[in-house]
Amino acid sequence: MPPGQTPEIFAPGIVSVAGRYEYGISFSPELNEVYYTVDIIGQGTGIYFSRIENGSWTHPKRADFTKSRMSAEMEPHVTSTGERIYFIAFNTGGYKICYVNRSDGRWNKAELLDSPINSDNVLYPNTAINGDLYYTKLSELKIFFARYRDDKYSESWEAGIEYGLHGFIDPYRRFILVDAPKENDKSKDRDIYVCFRNNDSSWTRPVNLGKEINTIYNESYPSISPDGKYLFFSRFNEEGGLPNIYWVSSDLIHKLGSQRHPNP
Image 1 (spheres, rainbow, N blue to C red):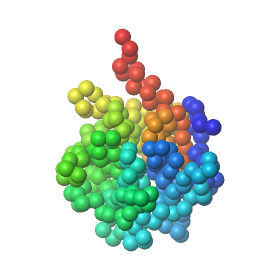
Image 2: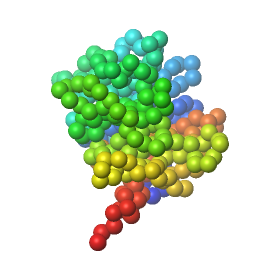
Image 3: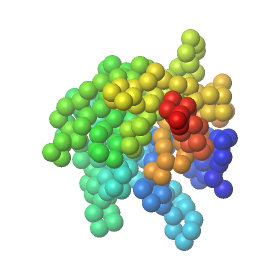
Image 4: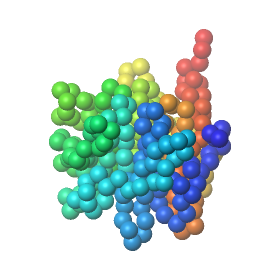
């Protein structure tokens, strides 16, 4: 059963498995495929996937989009068409955005994104429906975005988010989710916040999602399901500080948004 207002572990024993890191989850538009990052000590970091067959999720397998040409693959993002996945690949050159396109039901050879974006180390790529790409620029520890023009990303700009590391854009760019250390807290504990888009295309100051989402543990890597109904994130509450993926109704986000613009 889908969760309500209280976060629950997503697919325990299948996606969220004890004794390992899971984070950075993304779904196909039809919600019948799931891709996410798994980090197993001694086995490295890779993207795993599962799909619904005969009404049930298949046993997850490692995607290996780069055919082991890169030492790590992580943080997949399925675009709104379902025909491309952006992800981060790591090798001696650093953290770069790669992608795979789908044709005839299969994912083609992984390609490095040909863009000035990859001149830096970057993390957590995701896109709006119009193709704009949001990501974290590690040299500045800030969220940037690039507009999709003429089938490429030629320029990028700072998104203008006051603070936050991993940013996930709402498909319609109404809000962006970020994770960041608690305000006025010198600990490493991270919370999830939301920034709403103003009429002038700037963003509001980050708003904490509250105690139902944010606990004494780290909450990080936020994302929204393609249908907009659920918030996904990782909570680092397993023994040893390992994370599991949680999901919860996105109603809280929409409620906070309506409080900014109440009905007349």
